[in-house]
Each structure stands twice: as C-alpha cells, then as structure tokens.
Length: 359
Image 1 (cartoon, rainbow, N blue to C red):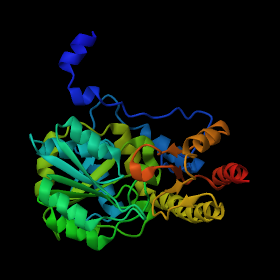
Image 2: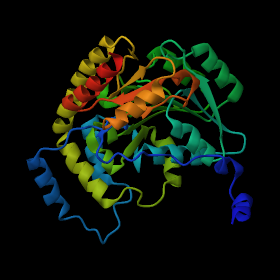
Image 3: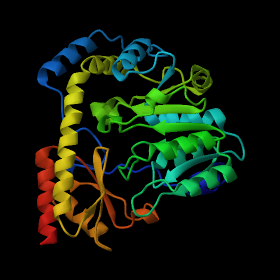
C-alpha cells in the first residue's frame, strides 16, 4: 500500500499533516474564536418551528437567493456588488485558488496569518509567498511587502483585517498601497468584522481588483459553516464557475436566514464579547510575566516567558481550560498563546489559573 500511496499522492501533500482540531469535551473551550453565548430559549423555539417546513428531500436553492437577500440587508452589502456564498470561508478560499491557479502562479499573504491561505494554495498547485510582519507589533512591513509583490507578481493577495492569530488591524493606508500595487486580486478577509468598527466593504468598486470575504462563524453561527464573498459581479461570475453545485445545504440556508432576521441578538452578544475582551486584556496586563497584544478580534495573543508556552498550555488544559498553543507555528510566535474571549466566568477561571502560576 505504501508504494502505491508514494506513487499516486503528490509529494507536497504527503509532506503535510492534516488540519488538527483538538478534542475539547469537558473543557472550557477558549481555542477556536467561537462566540460562547447561546440563543434565548424563545429564539431557539422559533428557529426549530421554522425548520419544520424545510424540505430535506429536496436539493437546496443552488445560489441561496433568500439567504443572499437577507445577508445584503443585514450586512449592508452594496447593491451594485456581487455576492457569492461558500461552505465557510475555507471553500471560498479554495474557489479563488481554483479560479486562477496555473503553473508558476503564486498566492501572497502576511505571516503569521491564517494557515488556510497557504494550505489551499498548495492544494491547487500554487506557490505561497509569506511576507513576515514587523516583529514588535505585527504591523505590515510595507517596503518588504511591495518588494515581494514586485518580484512574485502574485495572482492572489490575502489581507486579514483584523489579522489572525495576532488580533491587530493593519494600517488602512498600507493596505491601499498593496491593493494599488497588486497585479492580481486582493481579498480583504474580514472574518472578525463583528469585533471592529473598520471595514473595506464600503470601498468595494474603488479598485477593480478588490474583494471582501466574511463569515458568520465568529458572530455566533460557527456550526452553520457559512462564508460569503463580495465584489464586482464580473469577478464573482468567474469564481462562481468553480463552485460545487448545492454547496450550502438547506439547513444552513434556512437557519442563517432566520438568524440574520434576528441579528440584534447576535449584535448584543458580540458587543458583550467586546466588553469582556477589554476586561480580559486588563486582567492579563496585570500579570507581570505575560505580554498581551492589543486586539480588535474576539481573541487575545499573549506572549509568555521564554520556554514556558508548552508547560503553561499543558497546565491550563490539566485545569480544564483549552486555549491555542502557537509556539512553534511561526518564528514570530515563539512563546505565544492565543486565548479566545469566553464568558465572564470562563475568563475568570483562566485568570485564576494564570495568577496561581505567576505567584
């Protein structure tokens, strides 16, 4: 069997590890940037009543027209821009790569960043160019980025706004310089838009190569796996050609449409997360051995003393708290942990363990 695998599977795929999601049963889950709040019982009941009429024996609307209309209204999507739905942002990233992939073409992004830009580019046979962020504050190294664009001539450039896993929002003027220098598409990934007041959505159309990608996962609908891409219709019409038929299932379409009609509930929850983010950041700052970085997402990146990331991660897990250990993921993330903002009581439990560690 090994001989057959070695002969048929591409070497670059054999060299990869599958994307790992750790077991979280019984743990306080602060590792995956999820909204920790649940719906009120009255809203759950209304949602379940609506699902009774969903025809599970029929294929879904191939373009999700009702969902698209609700998304446009709820998110303020410009009426002259196209809208494309995906099975999470990951599928949209895959569709973008498949649309432009050719031998010798590349994807460029800023590192450390979302790992799926690189991985999906590799799956599509594209090269990946990662430009390191500034070491002190994870801001864009604009000269290095513009130089890399000139050399690599990337077909796709991804700019996360705010960035994962660092949590910071890049300087908008730097991003404009990148958009204007790009020979191909620039995708501004606004997965964490519920937790910041800045967006490029209103700037769509100012440049012919700008697209904005978002997800409903972080606002509280992670289980639905729904992402959306917004941009000039001419571009989205081409990208739509590589979309698999019926890619967004009937339950996701019905549930997301319902949830977005009650977006005020989700907005209240994301506001609560913003408030709690400030409290958590202040608590982390008080622990002298830790260095938390300012965040406009629903998580906080924390640098711990040299050589202690692995042991602190293990200690927290042993105490029933799961966070993300980023030590070893990228040189700029040495001794770094990423903490999702949880419920007030979950964050308090985390701080109690960290304070016990520092004393």
